[in-house]
Amino acid sequence: MTIVNEHVPTNFVCGHYVCSFAFPEFSALGTQTLLASLTCVVIGSVGFIVAQGGLGAYPLLISLVLSLYGLAPEYGLAIGWVIWTTENAMYLVLGLLSLVVVSLKKRKQ
Image (tube, rainbow, N blue to C red; front, top):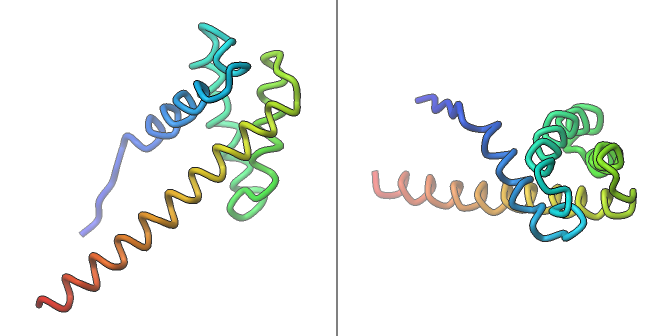
């Protein structure tokens, strides 16, 4: 059974947008916050391609993108690391949870 989620890009953009509220500098962009979030998702995807898992490349690219919107590079790096860490933590937690659920289902059968 294959499950295709056509809303994955929307989830990433919303994730960036929600994370923007944790940083006053990012949310101070006002009406450009959503556009900055979309740009971060598009350019940040390259970071995951360049370095497997985006380790280091992802926060650096987020910093570069946000510097185009007038944020200091230090804030961009901080935002990039926070988003990268939360995304990867979510993958690990949900992956382990699904592993447990699948193994419990197999035992019942």
